[in-house]
Image (cartoon, rainbow, N blue to C red; front, side, top):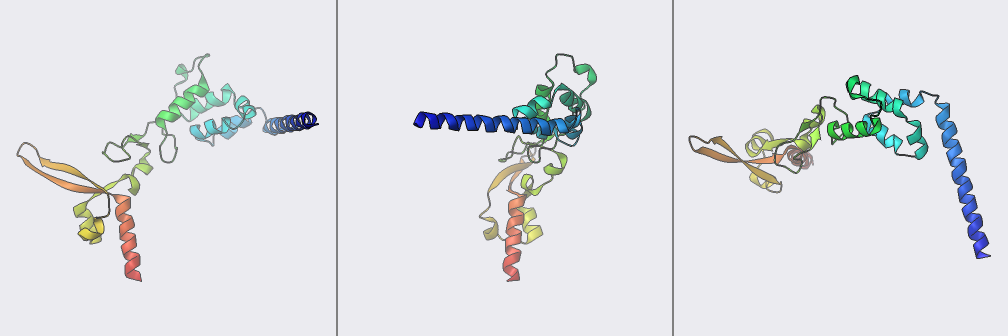
Length: 197
């Protein structure tokens, strides 16, 4: 009795899977022969890779033509580099890993700028617009005090790092505290909300 119920449950689940595959194939076939090629024009390479990973049917539907088109149009790969035996999907994956922004996933054909400052974001590769975001920028202690009229007490809670600057040859060195700009802006907003009360 229990064995018969298990068998019937497995038969029902396999029938559901077959129906789902048929529905997926008919939906993909409705896009037409070049449907994914047209769709891929609106996707970033990393988004196309995620889409192809959603199911086996979509993975098979996104054939070599889709990936070649993406390499030529969006990744700006020279046609001479694409040989008949080139694994185009793997090439898109490699390029998107190397040249996509770590924050917004936007693909930059010229490559992204790496953060070289010794913070928790060191080594992240960012596009030019994300590179200017406050969460990736720094502000010195003196600039924070001058611009936002902070006292030492208000900045005491923030994490900081010391940067040594000056003339090394003359021996005139001094250290300055550097704060994360987003943290400074958060403290400024908090102070402004307190003063508005």
